[in-house]
Amino acid sequence: MTKNILANIQEASKKEKKLLAILLDPDKSTLDEAGLISERIKKINANFIFVGGSFVEKGITNLFVEELKKHTNIPIVLFPGDYSQVTNKADGLLFLSLLSGRNPEYLIEQQIKAVPYLKNSTLEIIPTGYILIDGGTNSSVLKVSKTTPISQKNIDLVVSTAVAGMYKGKQLIYLEAGSGAKNVVNPAIIAAVKKQLKIPLIVGGGIRTKTQLTNAYKNGADLVVIGTAFENNII
Ligand SMILES: CC(C)=CCC/C(C)=C/CC/C(C)=C/CC/C(C)=C/COP(=O)(O)OP(=O)(O)O
Ligand SMILES: O=P(O)(O)OC[C@@H](O)CO
Ligand SMILES: [Mg+2]
Image 1 (cartoon, helix red, strand yellow):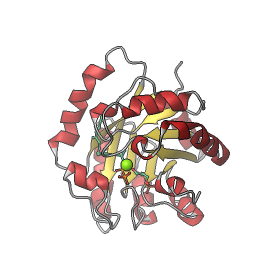
Image 2: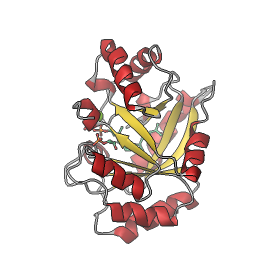
Image 3: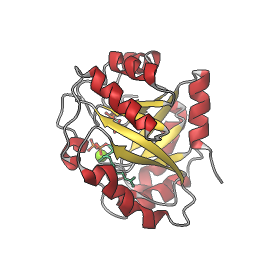
Image 4: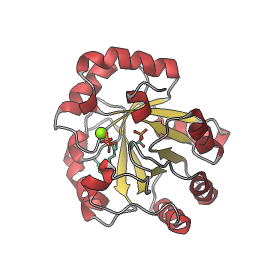
C-alpha cells in the first residue's frame, strides 16, 4: 500500500508543519534491536524512518527493513549510499544524485545500476538532489564519493546548485553537512536556499541539540534528519 511519502512532505511544507526523520544505519544495529529502536522512534514522534549508510554490507538492508516492518507502521524511506541498498521491503526510495560533486558514479552511474532492482518495484521513487556542504569533518559521504563539499561561505553556489536541481526536476533538495558533522548547515544557507525553492527542503548532518533543530526549521527546513544523536541516545 502506498504511503504517499512525497505528497505528504509537500502538503506539510505548504502548511509549514515541520517533519522529522530518524536515520538508521543497518550496519550499526542488530536485528534483535529493531523492536526497541522502533519504540524509541515512536516516542520521539518521528514522521519517517530513513535507512541507509555510506558503507553498508550487501544484503543487510533488506533484512533490517524486513525486521523493522514487524515493529512499526512509520514509513520507511531508503537513503542509499549505493544501489545495493535498494530493497522492495521499504516504502520509498530517495533517488539521490550528488549534485555538489563531479563524480559521474554518484551523478548517474549508481542510478543506472539501481534500475534492474527497481523493475516491478512498489517503492515510491523520489527524485532527490543531494548537496554536500562542508561540516568540518571528513564525512563518510565525502570519503566514499571522493567529491569536495561546498564551503559554508559559498552561499551563492549552494543556492544555484539547489535551484539547478529543481529545474532538472528533482522533487526534494537535501542539504547535507555529513553524518556526525562538527558544523551543521548554517541557518543563513538554509534560509537563502529556501527562498529560491518551490520544492520541499531536507536538512541533516550534525544536528544534536533542540536549538539546532529549531533553527533549521525556523530558517526553512521542511524535514530534518537526525542519525548520530539518536544512535548516541541523546534525543
Ligand atoms: C539512487 C541510488 C540507488 C543510489 C544513489 C547513490 C548516491 C548518489 C548517493 C549519494 C552519496 C552518498 C554516498 C550518500 C550516503 C548517504 C547516507 C546514507 C549517509 C548516512 O550517513 P553515513 O555516511 O553512513 O555516516 P556514518 O558513516 O557516520 O554512519
Ligand atoms: O548522523 P547525523 O549527523 O545526524 O546526520 C544525519 C544525516 O543527514 C546524515 O546523512
Ligand atoms: Mg553510516
